[in-house]
Image 1 (cartoon, one colour):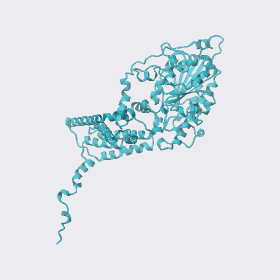
Image 2 (tube, helix red, strand yellow):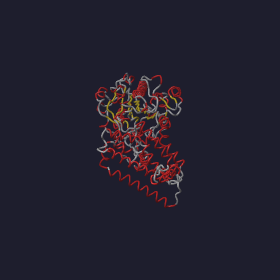
Image 3 (cartoon, one colour):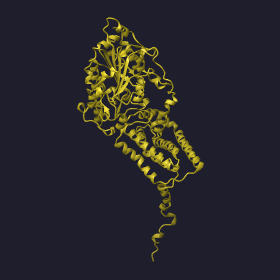
Image 4 (cartoon, helix red, strand yellow):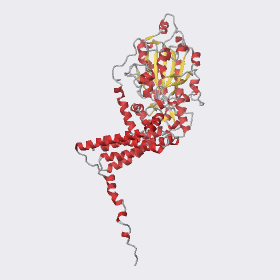
Length: 589
């Protein structure tokens, strides 16, 4: 007789499969009931892994470059635990039973969208970037939307939301649940701090050398930065009275000389063009091998080659460059101040801001201003040719400009006119919309918002076409000024608000915090043109300016330089920062 035991008795009871023992746990994790506290911990784990691919990719890259120390796995694990603790702490703040699922939906979608921008464009969500996002208009927002972002949102938010939808939440009653939630938040916070401190000696140099990692934990950095951006005006007490800068503003001696009997001097017509997203190193005038600026090259302009911006986004740079405080003073200001346009207007000149962008960021609030978004009958024909889908090429700003100027007070126009044009320029990521189809010179183009999916040369081509369109606009603007030299003494100064990244170091667009922003986001073009009448009014020596074109300048120089060129006197004028002062002699008629 065989001694082989029956199959049912082949294994001792202690060795029976454990799956049946795990079945209740599996059912509870997939169906519930789970308390919102436990569900938040599960979702936090998912977000820490799937919602922070940008962070883990960057750490993997740094490990390959031996920047994570002697034990990269230990340091990486520490960062993961700290990130998980921070995410779980935030999510645990939304564990009220009625708000839990809606709050998780919003946070998961936010995580997916932010991860899309971090991966696609190499950005981080610091307070400056969040403030810039909050200022984005519908046209700019449309340019950023695409199927890639939808896919990323579904990838991050989809699986946990399906799980949440099927999950039953256990009831939470009374203050006991509140206290348990609070205890969990405190425990998670202690875990995050403790883990961080345990490896502080290794983390400190890493975060010091790679500041972007401070804003890389998604969505914690976005939420913290949003709170910082929204409350910054309150913390800086900038809602108080506007600080006056116009006291003592007056027109200089050149105006009295021009008004004297027998003088043939004409009033100045000064065009200040605020560029958008232009890189100095993509201007042929500055040595770029491609001929991106043929129109400017024909018009005897002076290109200043070493100019640095105040910020890396429009919201920061535009108010800063018009401020009398300079970069350091503007960033540490306790209250808002009047700006360059206020001073020029107070001195008695006519001022007009024409906008083809997402607004003037407060700079033009107290001077006459117009936007290309609003219909203007004299510009209707040009708008029909140059505008589409709610966006216009910058050349539309020249259409009907005489009629716009005619709306300004006649007594001011008689003394002089200062025009400011705010360009759309090379604003991305929809660069292909920044140039007319019949003028594109560089092909093939990157014609998608998913810049990282384009061939690098295609991205360069489409960006260079936008620079060529800027050149075309500036050339037309100079011609417009020349055509009015029988009435005015014209001049033009072009200066971009910030630069742009085109995939260098895996970064696209702009807005990287200034402290660690790449040079291409801060090095901007500045171009000057004047006719002989304008030069004669202030005794400006063109040959002298050409010799000084390579000197280091910044947005700090704009305020005093324009005041000097326009011969506007004010106590806030700083001659040492006037880029044109060394080449300006005595004014005369």
